[in-house]
Length: 110
Image 1 (tube, rainbow, N blue to C red):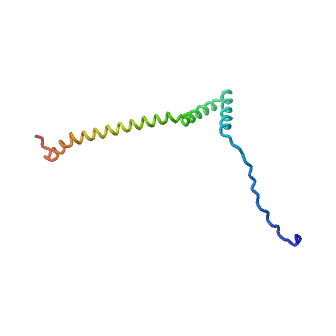
Image 2 (tube, rainbow, N blue to C red):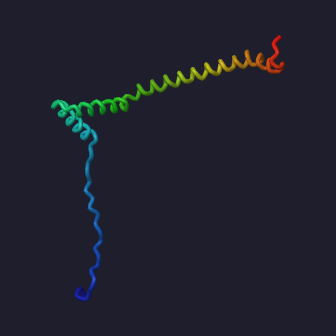
Image 3 (cartoon, rainbow, N blue to C red):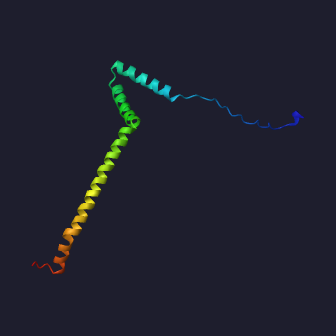
């Protein structure tokens, strides 16, 4: 019966999965070791890259400093808004009646 087949039947496709393990801490350590070796050799670009990486890492790791700065700026903004509201209220209460009287009398002063 196999001799009478004119076409080959396709075989089922097999999935070739090769699991890989990725350790981000190990990769970060290796990157830092490469940077340290480059800095020891006196490479100026490596020093610049190290400083830039430390700036990025410092801002992302110290969240309490950022929270304090945001809280301080929010309090300053709240204080400014409160001051402006108080000044606006005083302007309306004290000066607006005088301005309304002058406009109502046609600008004539008594």
